[in-house]
Length: 129
Image (cartoon, rainbow, N blue to C red; front, side):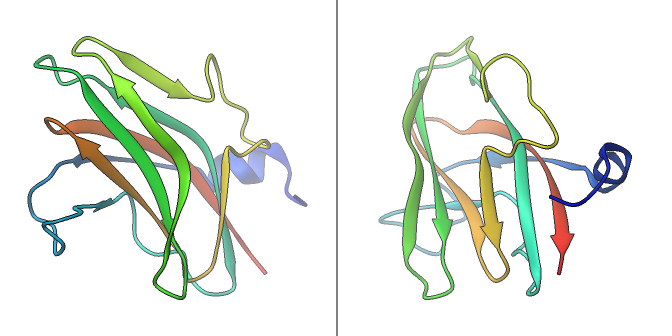
């Protein structure tokens, strides 16, 4: 990828968001953005995703990429999350040089939940070209 591990560590960002069925423009198919749109002339390398159960009921979450043509593309199928569950993608540990999802400029990653809201954290870094 052209950057040293220290340069990647310096660029690493972690965000946390609640994915829910409320506050969505499309009430028939609500999606929650996980971060701002990837800037043009950049790539976003997502190296880790953490999903926490909601302590209430089993939920299902899926992740989709919004492409520049305003079409959604599935990234991860619905993942069941039990009330006391904690999931990590990739399972075990993550490597800053080995992304689980790569996004190009002008795209965005969304989460969608079936059930009660859940919290998702994402670690990523951007590479400009």
